[in-house]
Length: 209
Image 1 (cartoon, helix red, strand yellow):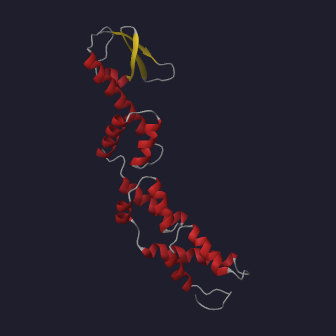
Image 2 (tube, rainbow, N blue to C red; image 1 turned 180 degrees about the vertical axis):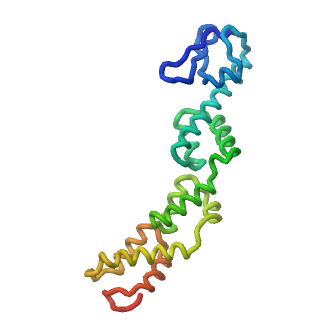
Image 3 (cartoon, rainbow, N blue to C red; image 1 turned 90 degrees about the vertical axis):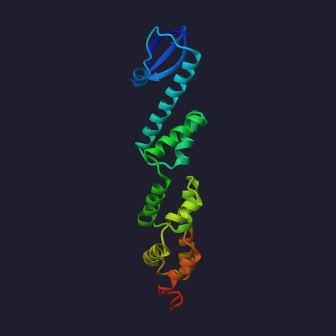
């Protein structure tokens, strides 16, 4: 078999279509062409072609993953799903994930810590909601237990939210239940809500809860 043509793709500045015996065989980046010495009229065996196609596909997948991760962080599960949706094989995806982890480009523990920190300090979510979203992102429960915040953080956030919300519920006789519903919707544990409410004096009953 012989490489009979190398044609630049119209919609890409860096990818080329490689033809073997006048039939399209695979696409490669300019870096691939240089790295693997893909040259016009050079002879190639079936075994060499299969290896070449696999290597070019792995490089393409890896570069696409870097492109995605350059825009925002993803968990291992999320980036794997995006690569799968793009049509890459499981074998190629697994090799890409291994490479990303080897270079510490993706790190679920680091991601979880940052996500928890943002949810606590910006969104003021409770533990349940944070755990729910992280599990949807593919973070394992065992890892969550290792990196999760202490209960004081959740308790302080609950008090802060109560203090802000009490002003809006000033003339409402059902203040306590409204606060409980609001805090539960933000993912706070009931025990945390209960303790936080004890520290706030509400006007509907005139007593500490």
